[in-house]
Length: 87
Image (cartoon, rainbow, N blue to C red):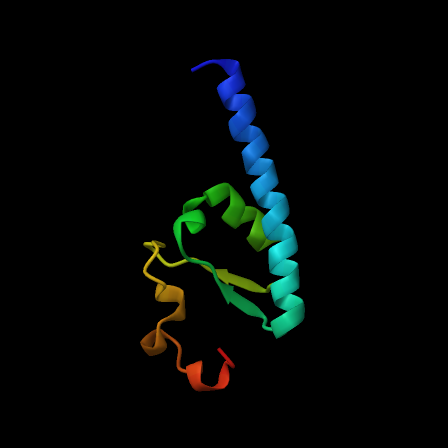
C-alpha cells in the first residue's frame, strides 16, 4: 500500500464520523431517547463506535456482539417496548 491509500481511508473515516455525528444528533432530537442500538455493517467500525459513545447525545450506545445486516437491533423479541416505540 502507498501513502495515498491511507490518506483516502483517513478522509473517508472523518467523513463517516461527521455524517454520523449529525445523524445521531437528529435521531436524538426526533426521539428524545436516552439509549440507542447501532447495528449493521458500519457498527463494526470500532473507532466510530467509540466516538459515538463519548461525544454523542445518547447516554448509552449498544452495539450487538455480531452487528450484521439482519436488523437485529429492530427485532421485536429483543425489544419489550416495541409496541410503544412508534416504529
